[in-house]
Length: 222
Image (cartoon, rainbow, N blue to C red; front, side, top):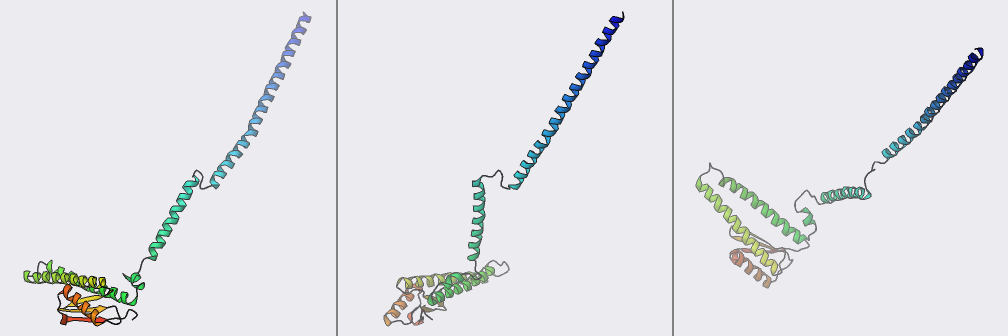
């Protein structure tokens, strides 16, 4: 009986030792796995942080070289267009044209410009009279007749100047006022034959008689 009890005690003790060893081994294995995971996690975090910083350092990330160059070209073109446009702006209309002309050409262009500006103001005044409902019909008709006359005079002057230019008298100015014609020729001297030719042209294109035509030469260098 004692022999059987000792044998059972040995078996129980052996099982207890084996259970203790197995528990220790399981606990050791769990600690080792957890430690390995903790060591790998910081490495992944460091890699992610580095990737994020690198992407922030490049503001053009995701753009192709062609897109970047196209944006640069658009900005440069806009700046160039703005500079070119600013360089063409002048305070006085026609100033850039007049500065590149000779004295005679400049005088003719300025005289014609002034003439057209005065006529434009006169036409504007006449239109105000014509469109005013409080003005009598007779006054409106007078304004209409005056505007028609202004248009007719402008056409005759332009026709005479155009024909004079075609005959070699460039930059000539013809002004019709009260039945007279003042003609300025951009030459220092005019021969009798040239004077007769100019007078004939002005008579035919303006209807003004020869006695009412005044021809004045002008040097191109003055």
